[in-house]
Image (cartoon, rainbow, N blue to C red; front, side, top):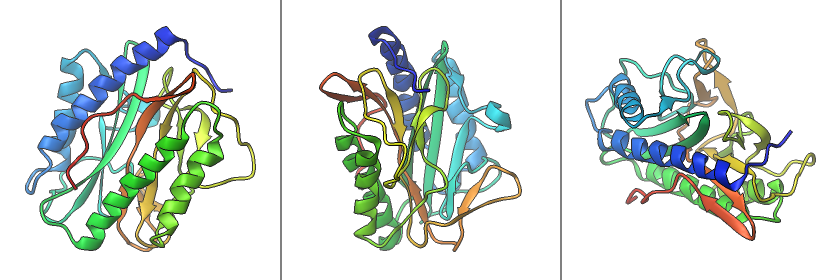
Amino acid sequence: MIQLKTAEEIKRVRESCRICAEAHKEVERHVQPGITTGELDKIAQSYIEKHGGVPAFLNYMGYPATLCVSVNNEVIHGIPGKRVIREGDIVSLDLGVNLNGFFSDMARTVPVGKVAPDALRLVKETRKCLELALEQAVDGKRLNDVGGAVWNHAKKFSYGVVKDYCGHGVGFSPHEEPQIPNYIRRMPNPRLRPGMVIAIEPMINIGTGDVVLLDNDWTVETADGSLSAHWEHTVAIVEGGSEILTSFEDLDL
């Protein structure tokens, strides 16, 4: 069941999203060669807790960290630890905040130093997939308008679109209905209505869209070992349009 939010509840989600976006900004400042993914996780947790929030992912369904850090061929749910970030990596950061029972979710892929042209293009075009999806995520449109925008742009570059995982509703919990696929599916295809809060998150691979789940039961990698990028915003559908709740200035790619 899709849970609609009141204006007051969206305000509370917006406050959670602000902390989430600012925590992202703080973590991204430290994404540089030599730092470990575990150190990035500690930065995220410290920032969230300092600002009155609780890490939404920590212990959620058993996930052992605050931040998901997925490097290069890792698509999502990379568990932070001793891995060292290196020049040329692309690093996807996925983070959620629980602020007094209201949840936010956001992901961005950060190039580390000088990266290969094909890697940089993947990051840019995945961000463009999100931007185009956001243009469709407005009052009166349908979920397939959102997913179709992602799919059509990715296929211009012969990229693989991950179908096994998708966006979702958010706000009262980290994951709610509806699912937000990054492609056009036949059913269901609900209309977007004021009060819906959704997380839109294209996951795009240079190669095939096929993925594999690692033995840790969390980390998802590309099946062919190719690079992957991931971008996500939390969005509120409002009368006549929408509002990006996790927005802050974009990376200069």
